[in-house]
Amino acid sequence: MISGTFGVEDAELYYELRESGPPLLMISGAGGDAGYYTEVAADLADAFTVITYDRRGNSRSTGRSGAPMDLAGQAADAQALVAGLAGGRALVFGNSGGAIIGLTLAALHPACVAGLIAHEPPAVNVLPADDPARGFFADVAERYARGGAPAAGRRFAETVRGEGAYRWPDDLWRRFLGNQDHLFGSEWAGFAGFRPDEGALKSVPFPIVLGAGAEDRDTYYARPSVEIALRIGAPWVEFPGIHMEFLRRPDRFAAALRALATWVYADDRPPEPRMP
Image 1 (cartoon, rainbow, N blue to C red):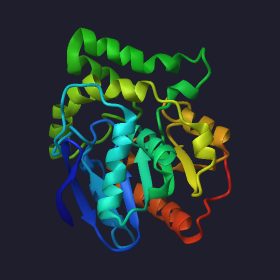
Image 2: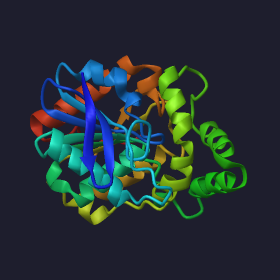
Image 3: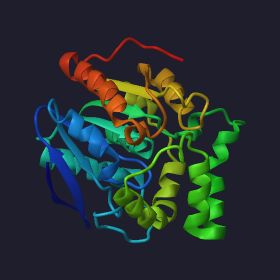
């Protein structure tokens, strides 16, 4: 594994690269830390050049300003990493907020994407107008305004199925705690306002696959994946486990991602559509 920093506009992004095949960029969600994917990346490194990174302002990357961050900027950072570390084009995997960034990247910078696997994007704005989940981001933002990061973080964790049932790596947990103000103060509004550019996503020249965990059915962060897949005519697949299965059972998650990524890269054709 090679680690280093990569210069982008107004920031240095910490990255880890495990090199053995075609490039796979993995984008993390809340907390923005490469450490979410450490074990999965190591497992996949025999078949892919896996690039993980701490998103701008998170953990070992710089660029924290306190100002609101937009998704276009997050996508620009990912595009710069692909250009600098992956020869200009990569398969992209994103979980949660990382899947939202991946969908934004695919719409704004399609030339750098060889394929996109979007796992559980919490894109609540695609749900019906009267769906209670539409209020999730506003609820957490209100708790942050009243009680700061601890209150918002507790509420956030309560909504994620399976949290508390397994142990995070200690170093990742410490970094995540240090990222909470950046998450809720700078990044939250961008994720809250996300609406996929359906026209752009329908017209991309590469496969897009949406997916969610088998244990996450009916959650606010799994249901949007089905809706987006239907709207853009993309396949939907079921992954094993929960939202953070790559921490709970990285071996299971890596096996599922390996099969899907190999399929997309080998044929430029995703699996047949399948809806829950």
